[in-house]
Each structure stands twice: as structure tokens, then as C-alpha cells.
Length: 124
Image (cartoon, rainbow, N blue to C red; front, side, top):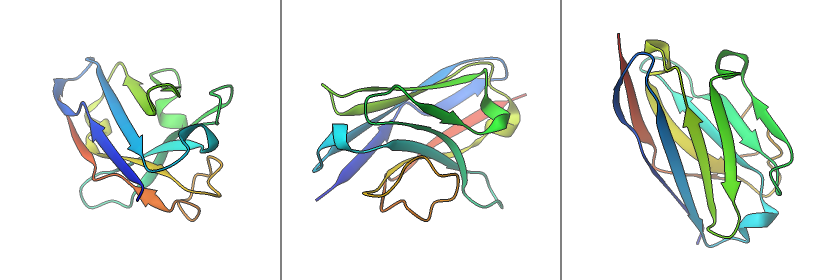
């Protein structure tokens, strides 16, 4: 079965950096777009970033453009989210996501597989 396992979350001060990783198994990794979503307390889950099969196309929500970078290593079946210049409003549980028909859409309707999530907390 498909498994997505995130790591790399933690507590960081505003302006700091974190790198999230998501290790995938049970799927042909280079045949799937990969995405990151997040959910803050009391808010709906929202799209953060996505990357195409080969990594030549990336997509970001406006609030993270210029600060976050999504990348992937198909040899390691892993997708990354480098987060720089973190702000308190980036505090959320971050989820790795994918699906057979997922192509980086901002809504999660095409997401079939979710990771368990990793907590990111940014203190002011």
C-alpha cells in the first residue's frame, strides 16, 4: 500500500528555516506529482506547494512564494519542502500528498494519499 512519511518539523523562531521531507513507498514515485498541504488550528487544510513528475514544474500558494522551495529526488522516492524566512502564520501541521490524478491543484479533490503530518511551529 502507498505510504507517505513526513519528517523534519519542529519549533523554530520567526525568520528561521526548516526542511521537511516526505518518503514515499508503495508507488512508482516518478509517475506521481507530489504536493504539500498544511492545516493551522481552527482553519481548513490549504495547498502549499506541488511539483511535477520530473521536477521541472513547481506550484506555490502566494503566501509562500519566494520563501519556500519544493524539490524531489526520484532516486530516493523523497520530496522536500525547504522553508525559509518562516513566519508565525506558517505554524501548522504539514502534510505530504499525492494521487493518481493529482496535478498540483490547489484544492485537494484529486489527492488520494496523505501522510500523517508533521508539526511546524514558528514562534514570534
